[in-house]
Amino acid sequence: MGKLKKLVQGELIVGDKAPFNVYTHSRVLLLARGAEVEHEQQVASLLMQGYLDPDEKRINRGGDTTEVQSQRYTSDLNPFLELEGFYQQLLKLHHTLNEGRKPGGLPRGIRDMAERLLLLAARMPDALLGAAHWPVARQSVSLMQSLRSAVLLAVVVQRMQQVEEPVSLLCAALTANLSVLELQDLLSQQQEGLNPIQKSRILGHPEKSAFLLQSLGVEDEVWLEAVLQHHERLDGTGYPRHLKGRAIGVGGRLLGLADSYAAMTQVRQYRSLLTPRQALKELLGGENRQMDAELGSQFLAQLGIYPPGSVVLLANGDTAVVTARGQHLAEPVCAAIRASSGQTYIPPPRRDTSDPSLAINKLLGQELLSKLQPFLFWNIAAARALR
Image (cartoon, rainbow, N blue to C red; front, top):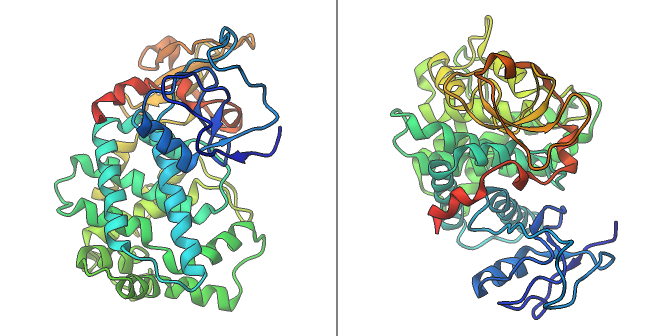
């Protein structure tokens, strides 16, 4: 596998077939070799985010494409690419702040991202959840945690009357950890516990992030309050102000749920990775009185016990990936990856787990997904309504 090279002007021509595969920097396929380049907007989008592998086989323009994949994978069709773009924007913001420079237009840029996430959640919530749960190696796990929190909230608030300012809440999710991103990335690789200095920085980061956002032009009180309160807990054991009960706003309580879930289901060196089901059980089950039970039940109802992107073993022996939430929490719709015999399904057949013969027997790890392209499992064409 060769080193990726940035795509440059002139390498893709509208009306021609792509002579090579175009990837993101983390090797998510954006456009397959042999697919038609449709319009200038597509080219502009690919130039911003696209890379090619110089060692891969190319095809001549207009040449034979019988052996190449013709699946299109473009920004107006695919939430996986949308999230990649959002991640790159957040990473650029992170680098700017680390260099001691003040990014211009931060409030508007973050709001644009939040509004787009809400639109995606309204039109294709299952694929968006799948994108948030799909395993992709990232330079910054803390940025991905923030983005996943925002995705979860974008889906959950679609049917929640309590949230009056959903855009502001998503803005808070995207920026709540802005002051400790570098520390969180360090901690994700650290095997020992927090030292006193690290603990002090973690305990103070809600206030520091809110102060930083204000210095960058954020005046939205709902946004700032959710950032300040996302680590407060109903029993007063949270931080930084040890608020209790209804003293914590709805935004802070919801963001606390989403941020905790995203952290629990993300790889860390110092603790075991939890499955979505385990994380939800730990947050909402048993004697836990730190989280809002009513909001938690709504969170669970929208996410499901097996969220899209989960890998499961079915009663018929198939290994499958969840692609859509079902009518019941534990009965999602899946796409089968392989049979009990080891045979790989091409294309992946639909499996409705409400059928007892296809019921979920076991939740599996996601390791095998890292070798697969997610567009195989979602009807990306359903997103054409976004155009």
